[in-house]
Image (cartoon, rainbow, N blue to C red):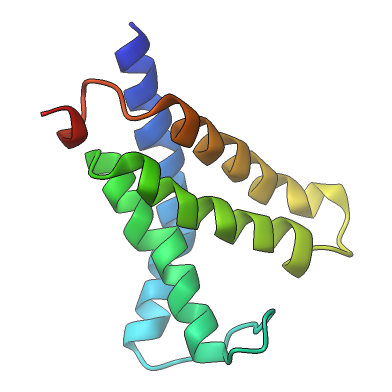
Length: 120
């Protein structure tokens, strides 16, 4: 049952993350680079990094390819979202980023389980 739990954790958190990442990906391919710039690197690079963390890496986590490595950009993205972007917002606004942070940190620590391409 542990491996089914890990599969549910990977697929559940990643699928929910994609609801945030896919709109950003579509924005990127449409050429709309309006986005926050928390590190001063520019809106386009910041959007590109967010797409990696919220769309590309969650797909890798769902499939189970380099799962632990793929969870790291998501964790970094959620740290930025919770503690930089929403630093002055109430907890109820930060909560979603913190939940994703906990979920993907758990994936990093536990690994993908046997129902992944990592284990094939």
